Length: 166
Image (cartoon, rainbow, N blue to C red; front, side):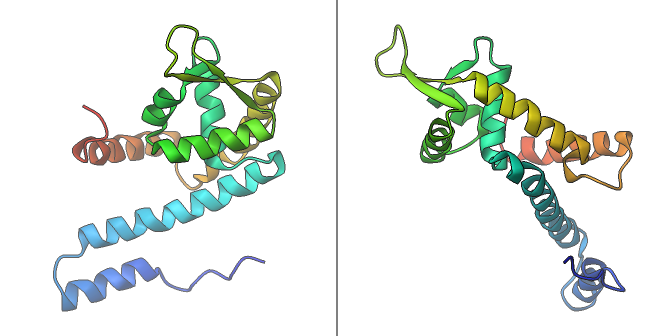
């Protein structure tokens, strides 16, 4: 059962107190809001993906493989594109392999490289999971399409300034 909504915005209240006791609160309120929205989005995505036996990380990996030209990528490239540590990619691929959603194979020309390929079961699971996520708008409720685009543009600036990409 979901908790009852508060009769006030706790982040606005914290920002007001911050302003009175510490100083300017705009970045504190923005970061706290982003962190709370992340919790909301992860909860919604987990709820939509759970019936499909996926986490968001495994879902993203399946989407990445589906988007690749041949349905396969080197593990190193997966890590770069998903912006994950190699150990995390290994764990994700381990689970996908256990569930027969992806397979590892040696690269045909580079013995140091391992390829990960999506299976037909992986494609099917990704398609079903995508339908579940899009039905709930990935959990991003309360915004128009234009507002979602503006949010993406603003967050892109933060990611660029942090060095995510050039």
